[in-house]
Amino acid sequence: QVQVMESGGGSVQAGGSLELSCTVSGYTFDNECLGWFRQSPGKEREGVASIYKVTGSTDYGDAVKGRFSISRDSANNALYLRMDGLEAEDTAMYYCAQYASAWRACTLIVPQMRRTTWGQGTQVTVSS
Image (tube, rainbow, N blue to C red; front, side, top):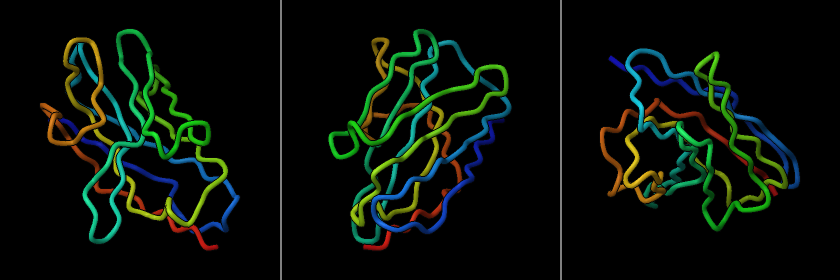
């Protein structure tokens, strides 16, 4: 059984920074993706960033490119999301997920995800 747990959320003023952490324990698989997703009230869950276990390749949602950075500590099964230049529009519940890749790529489109395990989420609030 896989367990995914996020931490590091909080409140920050616009222009500030936060770093989220995620630990994944239990079953892992070779074509594994790890990713960050977010959801704000009344909106669908959207992809923020992903990383492919095999190659370390990363992908980012258009809204966060150039401001957010995803990284992984394989030894500790940890995933991080560094968020700089935060904007009020970044306010959301942030979720970490483990899921399977498709054709060696990690989708950021939630309906296309397979074998997904979600964390419980951590709230990020950015005040303007």
